[in-house]
Image (cartoon, rainbow, N blue to C red; front, side, top):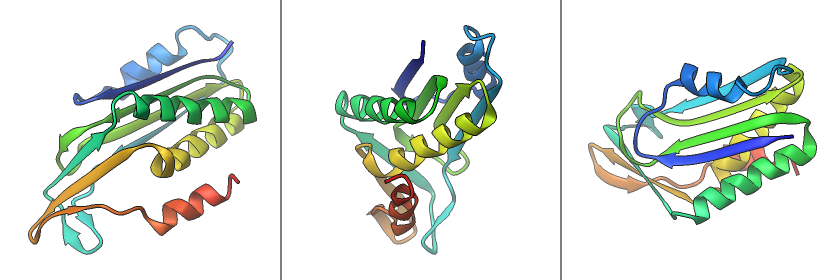
Length: 152
C-alpha cells in the first residue's frame, strides 16, 4: 500500500511534525528523504524582498498528485507528501516540502528528486517577485527543464 498527500496552503509547516506523521503508519520504512525549498533574497542579480505565489486551485493539487503517481510507477515508495505554500512569502520562508518514504534510501532519494524536478516544471504555479526595480513575474528556468529531461 502506498499513500500520498498534497497540500496547498498559506501557512508554514513544521518539518519534524510532517515527517513523524508520514512515517507513523510504516514500521518497514528504512529511508525518509525530504527536500525543503526556501525563498532566496537574490534572483537573477536582483534583490528579492518578497515572492508571491499563485496557483490554480484544484488543478494544482491534481497535477501534483499525478506527479506522485508517476514516481510510484518508477520506485517502490511507501508514501509521499508535497506541501506547497502560496501567497506572499519573505526571504528564508519555506516554500515547498517534498517527503518520500521507502524501504531503502536509493528509492526515496530518486523519487524525491523526480517529484521536485517535475513540480518545478509541470505544476501550475506563478511566481511574482518584488525587487528594487518593481514587481516582476518569474519565468521558467532552463536549468529546471534540463533537470526534468534526465527523467524522460
